[in-house]
Structure formats: structure tokens, C-alpha cells
Amino acid sequence: MVHFSRIVSAFPLGETMSTVITKFAVTSMVMWMVPVAVIYGFNHQIFPGVSQLSPSTQTLASGFLAVISVNLVIGFYIYMAMKETPHQEPQPDPTFLANAKASINQPTSSQVSDDSHGKGKVE
Image (cartoon, rainbow, N blue to C red; front, side):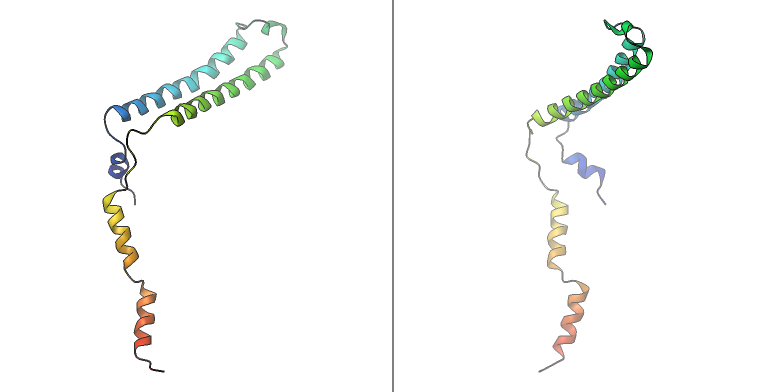
């Protein structure tokens, strides 16, 4: 089981964590506001030329553009995340590393039983 403290310790605390949370919060708000604004603009004919479209075409166009806008916001968020440079190289948790090395060095129960049967036999 992975403990939350191990996950948090992988990230440098302070400014970096707060900027990540801020970017995520802002992106989440924009991801909700932009599609609503697109649909609102189509329904209230704020965009030029929308009044010339039929109601069904307005609905389809507003829905299509709202979905595209969400995907653009998500794409921009991914681009910003990929552009960030890590402040510190990730390091493995020392406790996990020690436990992993110890588990590799311990024989399994099937190996122990095979060895005990083989010691009594002489060919």
C-alpha cells in the first residue's frame, strides 16, 4: 500500500506544490467557463452571423464548439505541464528501496522446500 506521505515527499514542498495546485485550479475553472460562454454566446446571438442560422444548426454548432474548446483547454494544460522543467530529479523512497532489495534476496517458500528435499537425496 502506498502512503500519502510517500507521494507528497516525492514533490518538493512549498512554492512548487502551490503553483501546481494553482495551475490545476485555474485550468479546471477555464475548462468549465469557456464551453458555457460558447453556448451562451450562441443562444443569445452574441457571435456575428449566428442569427442567420436555424435553431438546430445553432445547437449543433454551439455544442461542437464547446467540446472543441474543452479539448483545447486540456491540450494547453498538457502542453504547459510538459514544458515545465523539474526542479529536482525524482529519488526513490529509501524505505521502499530497502524493502525491495530485501525481498529479492529472500528465498521464496517453494525454493526452500525444494532445497530441503534435495539435501537428503544422494544419487
